[in-house]
Image (cartoon, rainbow over all chains, first blue to last red; front, side, top):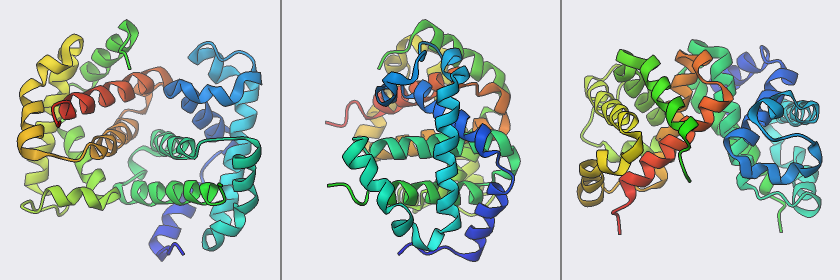
Length: 147
Length: 142
């Protein structure tokens, strides 16, 4: 099981408490679709994804980004039981959504960059390290029930 | 992966804005890489990797200079970094996976120091650029 030091939990809570889930979620998903355009393959029915401007303004992208990051918030509330927390979501992403787990890693890296732009100098190296660890374990938990 | 004319313009503009601070960006990126991905320290057993290390600062300057050179010759990154490519293939032999890690850290540095610079479009172009640099540096590995 992943261990979290008190300092890591502080660095996570300290940032998360200041995050707008709606804004950061929307931005992270939009950037995923812009920076790694092949990820658009999962969102054929989202309407206009024809340009970065279209993607950023797309209401379905914004709504889905908020949904994804809200779920991330659940992980943060359950750092000591990520496996259990994400068990059903893992099955869903495998059996119904057919998402390659590599996409979770890509989104995780993007989320770190979005947080970095928002928190600038407060996003210290220690902070970055903790959050890269967090997105890594979330990605791992989401991939865990793949078969 | 192809750098479009728009990508090249974004890359040149970004590095122009970073300007003389490139050295600091390089050092910051390395420091973040060593903290975030400790396995990368295995390539620097001969370095003092403590906070504020002069060796890390010096190496960050070298890394930044190479990125600036590549940006200034974005139409021919392979040509611009040919000697560095040889060096990595013959001497340094850094595992290719590590270039992505440094690239991520460089983007985080840009994000923390110049967030308004890192629009989604510029983010995409810089990510592609850093991938291209990594590809060039590992191109002669085998």
